[in-house]
Length: 180
Image (cartoon, rainbow, N blue to C red; front, side, top):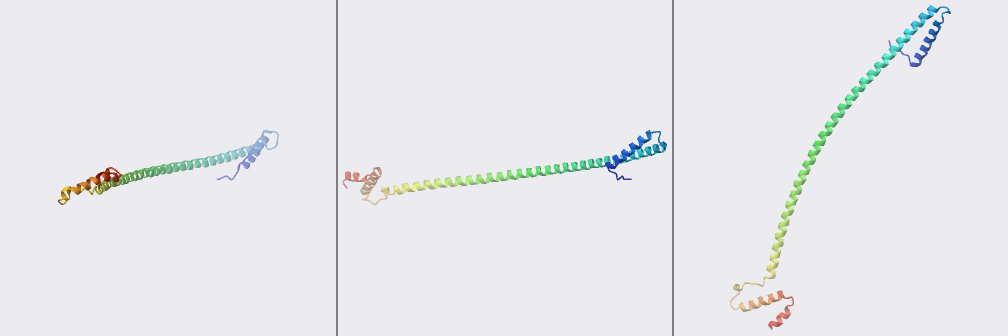
């Protein structure tokens, strides 16, 4: 039978029981035996009430502890699942980052190789342009064998004159020496 009694009512009942016990101790009063029986039954009721209340509170506390243990265990399991999920995500992220770094490294390597090829081609083009400039600068140097007969003297004179102009920037003084 559930008891609907709070602590204040229990305290008031206890006070009544103790005052009844005090009355029983006064043996000179009328109906001592009856008062003693009433006091004993009140004490039994009080004891039963306190025991039931205590048992109910203990049961409620045990139920609370059981629920708290279940909640703690569920929280620990959730935390473990979350940690596993985070670890898996971190591993996946690390793998993805490593793959991205490898792809980036490969891409950078390709770019470097292309730049090196362009540099080589640029050097080849530079060398060819230098060769062409040199050929253009010396294009007046026509081999003597290709000149028609009788023009060899003038070809040598022209070659000598061009070489003189090239050796010295002031070609006018050199022309004066040759009396052209």
